[in-house]
Amino acid sequence: MADPRFFANTGPHALGDIARRVGAELANASDETRLVHDIAALDAAGAGHLSFLDNPKYVVAFEATAADACIIHPRYVERAPAGMAVLLSKDPYRSYALASQIFYPHEAHGAPSYDAAGRIDARAHVHPTAKLGAGVTVEPGASVGEDVEIGAGSIIGSNAVIARGCTVGRGCFIGPNVTISHAHIGDRVMLHPGVCIGQDGFGFAMGLPRHDKVPQLGRVIIQDDVEIGSNTTVDRGAGPDTVIGEGTKIDNLCQIAHNVVIGRHCVIVSQTGIAGSARLGDFVVLAAQVGVAGHLTINSGAQLAARSGVTHDVPAGQRYGGAPARPVKEWARELAGVRNLGRRRKPDAPDADE
Image 1 (cartoon, rainbow, N blue to C red):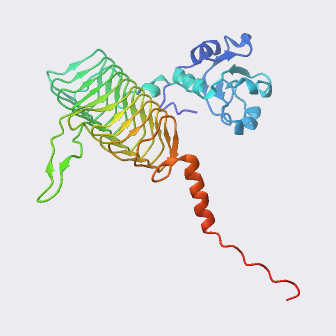
Image 2: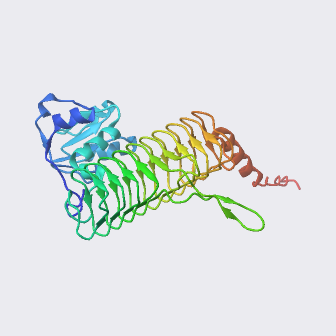
Image 3: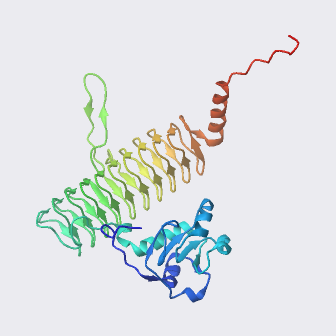
């Protein structure tokens, strides 16, 4: 259960309202007005708590839970404990995520880390030409530069820096120590602490007698509903822009190089690096520590296993793994073959008569 020192709970909420908002259906209509006060895991839940069952490994925990209510798939309804209110959903985990947002909306969209929302701290620096919408929060030490525009309800965390000319949309969360330059950011974007947006791309004319810097003259465009994890870096384009598509989620400690174009609703997991001018289609998944070479295309719906090394284009909807990355079945056969090479055949046992 969430520690109230850090997380503000909006409960209680009626189960009927929750069911309508999360796309679930109450198994018993008489539970419509029944109140729940918080969310909790099956093994920690008790009176007044809402939980969920998504993984069949936890059916035994579901049967033993003391939760007042639970979001489950219809296949498990007969196994619900007596007296439990059941919310039926074909996608219980998604319904639980939406229910969590009802109880803890600030955690879904970002909340001030220092003080109440909607105020500009006296220790922040806001340039006189900057335009801030209604209800914008600027925390201590933050710097908002010349001609910056920030949409209504956005939060700028302590010591964040938004450089000259940048725009930030409505309802954004710009975490502490974030730096933004040469960028336009859409609505409801979350940038967690330490994210760096818009710095120089790594561009040099290399060779003797020296490495000459190539001016990086593009921007970073971050579309609506993007979330970027702590200490991830997104370089601005060299001439074309670096683009992060709508709804994409990027984990901590990732590197997005100059001119990269990432499609809509992609998932990029921790310590992944994408080299310059690579392109990702929509709904691409890159697991942890994937390396993507420059100037190639990973087409829509493709998935790359952890630690894959992508050196050529990946077809749409395909699952690849390994280094160099190849179709998962081919990769698995090769791994099995390598394991078999290391197994020495035992010599035949001598005959008993010898």
